[in-house]
Amino acid sequence: MIDVREWETLKYHETQSQLWRCPSRLVCVAAGRGSGKTTLARRRVVCFLPVKKRHTRPLYAYCLPTIKRAKRVAWPFIKSLIPPEWLAAPLNNNMVVRTVFGSELYVTGLDDPTVIEGDQWDGIVVDEASDQKANWHLSVLPALTHRNGWLWVIGVPKRHGRGAALFKRFYYDKAFTSC
Image (cartoon, rainbow, N blue to C red; front, side, top):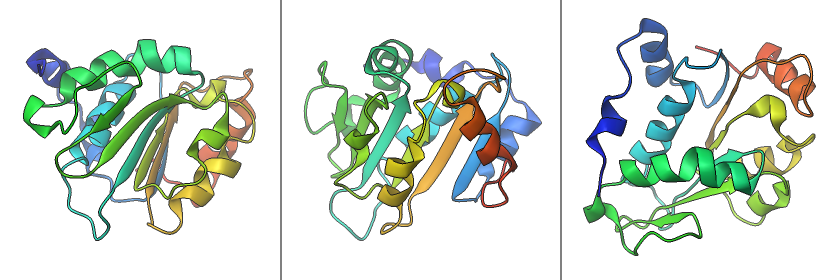
């Protein structure tokens, strides 16, 4: 059942509103804890599920550094955002949402970045980017090319962490934007 409270948890904030409306394909968001970036990202990926595409199986992913973290941090909240009438199959512990629209959403960890390989994706969120395994982008970025998929790389900026240097590089890269 959809949890209305999950949709109501954010109070209006102009910077969050700018991020929500950002038309850029590649977005890097470095913001502190409690800024709303994760809540917005979960909502964004869910809002794309009913969007009609030229292909029959639109694919989306919400990625955290490990599957264990994905199960704890993302899966319960994403489940609560999905209206029951959107579901083509019941939700279970494999952390996949299959919709009546033909779209699918995978909640996963990038502890093995190759989980993204083999398919072309329409949109991916990489959360907790400072803690992601080094070189995850070598699997994720090519998986977005054929469908011109979007990517949100979000997290708290850290000096140390296995993905901190890459996150900083993305943040300052001109190909990415922070809207």
